[in-house]
Image 1 (tube, rainbow, N blue to C red):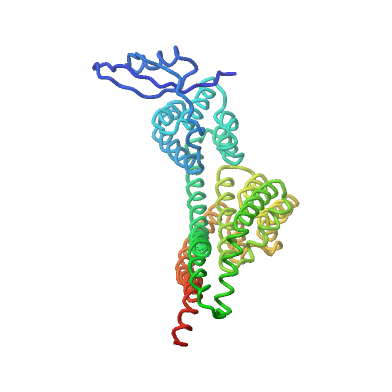
Image 2 (image 1 turned 45 degrees about the horizontal axis):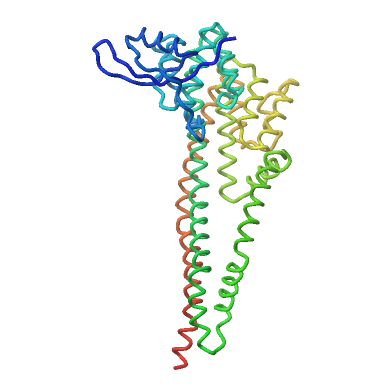
Length: 401
């Protein structure tokens, strides 16, 4: 088994005598110096790169998408796999990515299959990714498969970004509104209460209601905040451990007006894109359906796809099994039926994915446009209500005078 590589920081002089510095992955200091010498660098100082206090930059799914496209481009240009990995590792600005690519490169140099090296990093490369790479290695068409992998990852990340965009805006505005309202109730309203105490008259019911909320937050606000934090932590832990809770929430999310429709279309797009990519890569349909079930992103669609897999394994046509689930739209089942008759299921699935990805994009834009005036109206009512509650006694006193 090859030794794990380490990232070293170095400084020295190149062939022209110019001072240069950088980082390099190697098993030892000696190997690092030898690698630099081959590159025409006379190393004066080579030391192990200190790990950042918080573990450095994380490797994100978008990073994997980018390097997948880089690998696909370099392989199609005739660059060897080992050279490709080394070039990407050297040029990457994330130390964790450089380290991971260095380890993968070391495995490949030792004669291990590329897919086997990737499987040692399951957090970054899932089973679907590794299975596709393995298929490409076995068929001798790794560059073609990698182009499909890169396209799949790019489409998946774009779809994920659209869903986050749909969720982020309303949540961010609600959080800001909650913070502003809390600050007003805790710090501003009490100042008015001191003024009202000198009036010697009964305050309007609405003003009394706001003052009661203000006193409650002043007395018990910290306990409420602590309770919410604890509840959030407990829910997060339970959500991770309980498959039943996750499945239940997935089902309920699909019933939310507008957002549920976006999630349904996103799941159809993920299913179609994944199945098209795996099926076109030569993965048997049963295995491809397994991958599509895992990538669908929703328990309702996952269970439906697993049902389709079971029916297809028993000899049923895929479009018939899909129609029996009552989950997939009629247009999708009809297009799959046409694809099965024409012997071009992968092409038809790719078209379905493109259609639904575009629909998700349009719906997200429409949702944002719809929510903006609604959120502004809610903010106006909340903040305006507080202001009216505070000034109502003053107005009434002015009328009496």
